[in-house]
Image (cartoon, rainbow, N blue to C red; front, side, top):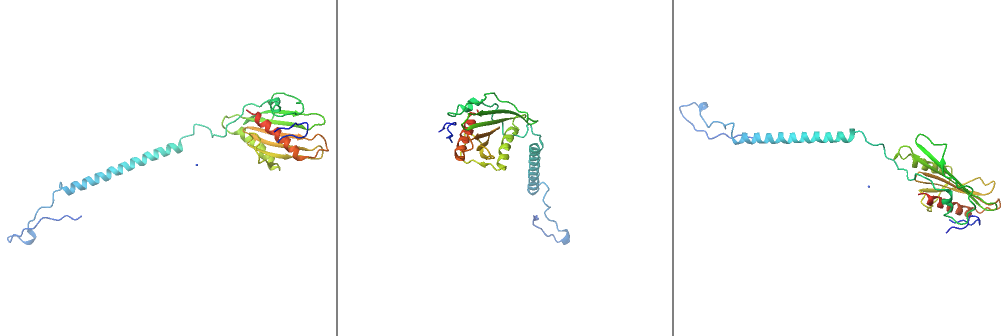
Length: 247
């Protein structure tokens, strides 16, 4: 449940056998006639021919199958890809107004400006950046600021936009931000950020959602307010409102 911003209490995968021999005395032993050898067109020869034909047929099928497989394999490996490598698509194409974010919380200080998102000067050859900056301020009250960067991929489906948003979050974590285990709206990942405490206490949240990189900062009303837990609750609530305003 959200609490008033201004009150400091903000929400929360084989063998061939010959025929018989007949002896005749008038002939020397070596001239004894016998049955002639089997004719070449006999059953045995036929069997041999059939066996050889079968072997050749099978061999032919095998060779054919081999070339078919090789042909298919060549198509699957050597054919050029018709599309570019796929990446995570851009989830968002626009940013909300500051007033849309604020409408999801109660008793925020006055909104200083409700200007629409504008192109950022840091756009490059892979992405186009759209930036939204919001602030809610009032003397004697905690204040909140919000920065949203929408990264549009120049090549649809390249994943450059979401990659940019994720990188921003990761840089913050590498600097010491602490990943938040609780769910912050629809954010993909979020982390608590600490700031220099020499002046009024500040705390923040850095999160990314699709191709949007978001930073929230809450500043205490004055130097006497050192309640960090309350500051974090307020920052989480504003981050949640920002996340839920993305559509």
